[in-house]
Image 1: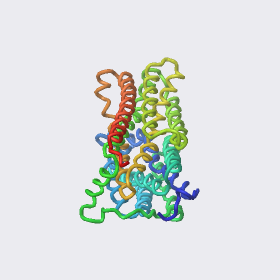
Image 2: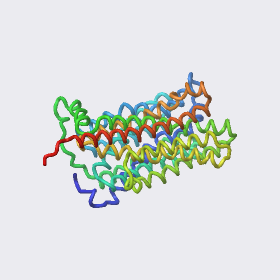
Image 3: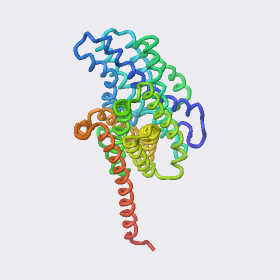
Image 4: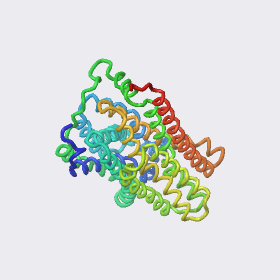
Amino acid sequence: MSGDHSKSFHWSVLVTLVLIGVIPSFSGALINPTIPAIQETFSHLPNSVTLAQLVSTTSAWVVIVVAPLTGYLLDKYARKPILIAAVIIYGVGTSVAFFLDSIYLILATRILDGIAVGALMVTVPTLIADYYSGNRRESVMGYYGAVQAGGGAVAATLGGYIAASFGWRYIFLVFAGALLFVPPILRFLPEPDVKESAADDELGRLEAAAKIVREAPAKLVAGIYLLVLLGMMSTNLVMIEVPYYLQGSLGVGGSQIGLIISGVMVAGVVVATLYGRIKQHVRHVTVIASAFAVGGAGFILFTTASAPALVIAGVVVAGAMGFGIVMPTVNDWVASIVQEEVRGRALSGITMMTYGGFALSPFAPMPLVDAFGRVGMLRIVGYAQLAVAGVIVAAWFLTRSTADSTLSKTPSND
């Protein structure tokens, strides 16, 4: 690569990379508080409620499509131009909505937002993995996750303030601030010197996929993707279902709910920041299993406890595990087991599963809600997370035992 950032530490590179994490976190969190106001503005249109909600959710579905394409482009071409293009598309394409009077045109800008966010969510972890290795990469992944979690909390608060003080349209101008990242990207981020992959020939995509399977444990990579999907589905329930639970079952007011959700984000920042230190002492699999176990315990705690302090503690723990520890762990884990020439495509799967979990979380638990009620559904999610943690531990012991058995049967060359 252009400069060995694993051995020499450059604050300019670190700060630029990590702060870019603010951009994707602002995408939905900034807009969500303004959905009712947008709906009211376009209430004369049929299905105005659905259209207003799509302003928030459209980009998530686009990210699922864009992420694998971004991974392919990252591995076939240079990383830095894709990062710059994504930032420009985000800053210009999304902020144009300020000037638009048609909600359909505003929705079109949200497609551009999804393209940019999908590219950024794959490109930045790929660059972190390119620049850093070992403990330093683990720490930087944690810092990046902390900025994303903290950015979501700041964006939600800022969005509500701007909408109340100036009107919902002004929120879109905030997105133009992403353009401020272009100069430091050009100045401080070098283009990694990644080995040329087989993607240059006519069978490039198939060969890259085969390389991931051949040179990394295919079942492990697929398993990590599945854990991301399950983890993000569960975590997002804290955002979309827990407020209903707190309000309906416990009579918690809207302002108090906002403080509790902010507490989830702050806890996520703290946990993500500590990821590098945690990872120095334990394996990736231990971190993930612990995250599911602790997160599941949080769900069970806040759905069974009666004391307000315990309920709040359970909600914060349940959300912080997903936002704070799962994302840096899985990005670091996948980056550590795949070859650098297919790293972009491998990491794109994490982005796909992350947004797939977010997109599915409003719908997947509905059968459980119908059968057991909202409280029962949340409690079942907690037990399911504990079960997943148990499966992870059992699978690790099984694979380790199999590997040890295979090695013991290998003939000695002595």
